[in-house]
Amino acid sequence: MSLHDLTALEQGDAVRRGEVSPLELVEHYAGRADHVGAFITTTVEQARDHARRLADTGRPTDAGPLWGVPTGIKDLHPTAGVRTTFGSAAYDDFVPDASDNVVLSVEAAGMPSLGKTNTPEFGSPCYTEPDVAPPAVTPWDTTRTAGGSSGGAGTAVAAGLLPVAPGSDGGGSIRIPASCCGLVGLKPSRGRISGAPMYGDPIGLATPGTLARTVRDAAALLDVLEGRRVGDPFWAPEPTTSFLDACDREPDRLRVARFIAPVIADVEVAPSSVAAWEAASALLADLGHDVEDVPVPIPPAAVADFETCWAVLTALSPAPPGREDRLRPLTRWLGERGRAVSGPEFGLAIGSLRRHAAAALAALAPYDVVLTPTLARPPALVGELRDDADPARDFANQKDFTPWTSAWNVTGMPAVSLPLHWTDHGLPVGVMLAARPAEEELLLALSAQVEEAAPWVDRRPPGW
Image (cartoon, rainbow, N blue to C red; front, side, top):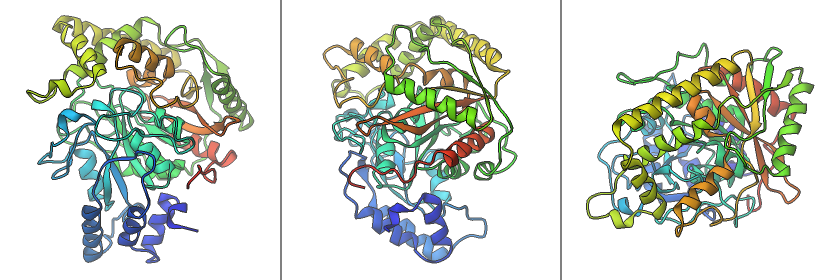
């Protein structure tokens, strides 16, 4: 057995027992070839230095279970002294002088970072094909996308290049790679993880989260990242226990709402996505939960409001002066749409989106969790969604691929994609569960119960 065969928690336990050192883990992962487009910039020397500092200072008495376990940082997160491109050629030489909350939290937890994981320009598309790095591909079929925008983090974990990794999610950007790469992808509640110090999303759609091979690994990394900082505009109540401990709770009999009609109309749902959703429904029923069909809780009108907000968010990420020509056509097109929105129009779109969210939360309040597919079909071929010649078509392709994920960014609910299904050709197909706001503990308890009933950790892609 190799070190990367161990889960992140098993690696952390081996460090705690003195069976392996943080530096040995760093060296093991540094020696593994990136054949899937996982990283934009590697930071092996910095990781070695961090691991040596951990050895010099010794394990703190309050160290968490992932102390000494390596990870990577999505290239949307500014990292002091490390090139941070935001997935854009316009920032290909940018080196921040300060780190954001995610980076600081990971460093404080004693987790050396091996590099900046791949992401598309400004994290906007649901595929990861930046101009500053090769495409991120799923290790299950390297002709197909790893998803986006946390595609580098997803494929790094799925290919055994990292044991666990943070991502971020404004419309599905953690759960999409989780489905494409056969992982657990957890988007927590709005305000669960601080967006300090930039607070770049004034709407509240985006949040950091976790990608992992197991539910417990995802929960343990959430324990590292969660918490508020002074000045946060949104925050979730403190959990009653650690999120890792929540995985050991046996959930009560739950009411599960399910729907499969896409939030975005006229999207064709592949048979594999339907099969995954039906199998998950049956599994939840077998586990003693009540599964009920419900109407789609968010109306089609919300899509236009979301698009307005998404375009404005893109416009808030301009290129440095004189480098506008380095932006991708999709980014320029979305940015132009965003700049054409007036202040009152933007405010009206936010208000409308929040009313849609309130109505959805009211409709779903009688239910403990909601079940949908994660994606409309298995991982797309590299280049299949992207259309530089027609950015409007590119954007439409993305909506057809991901017609459910953004609903839970709108409501602020926690949501997780679980790798419960594979196609006959060996491609992973995720299913998605969402819970009421701030109920990650229940969501993790149920996800752990599902994983125990239908384990997936021993499924490994070619080249593992």
